[in-house]
Length: 188
Image (cartoon, rainbow, N blue to C red; front, top):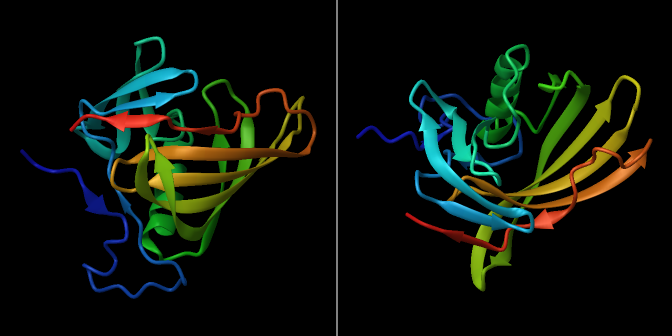
């Protein structure tokens, strides 16, 4: 079986020098059979798409098939390539921050800025988990022109975004993803 675990920071492996101060962050979709328990319920991962190692497949809280680009963004044809190229640059360490536009499947346009803040160990299910902490700012256009700020913890070992802290910088909190921390991660 071919492993889809790779370093988006493979710039080192291919001889490119990293121009940012960030160390590369390994990314792979959660393995098939991994289950993450959130406050809203459980998500069961079914592995990466065979044609795209950044497209993570899962069964959502309602046990329905679902996918996420970088295990984060709901896929949207007009945005997928932009998300992949920018987050690949960030995870590789070649860029210290990235900014791009994302159109959600519900047609909301947001201007997204991401950067890596630090590495930090947190506790999940009574076990220490080494994470990479990201800063994300999202400015939405349209009828709700909301401006949100997020601090997000990513577990490179499991491929899961394990914690999120959300803040409203402008507009209303309607539609803002709530703060959370994964309760447990089980499986292969």
